[in-house]
Length: 75
Image: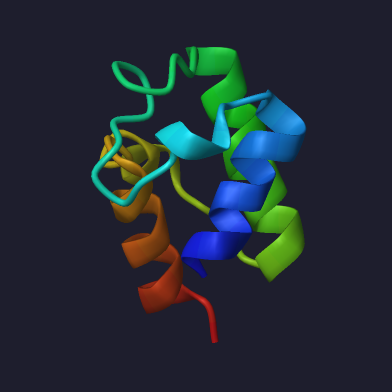
């Protein structure tokens, strides 16, 4: 799951692959803005066939948070 999220960040949002770690903060470390975060959420929803609630998005502080959420919610 981590590798898939990393791939999305690198290929779709032009994040440096060396910067993507489970502990990397999406905003502070990777420079993701709110529009890019929305894009990431939409990509995850499309790829995994789930719906991510607005309240859950606020918990996405690190790459690991996204991976953990998906691991719990993707069947």
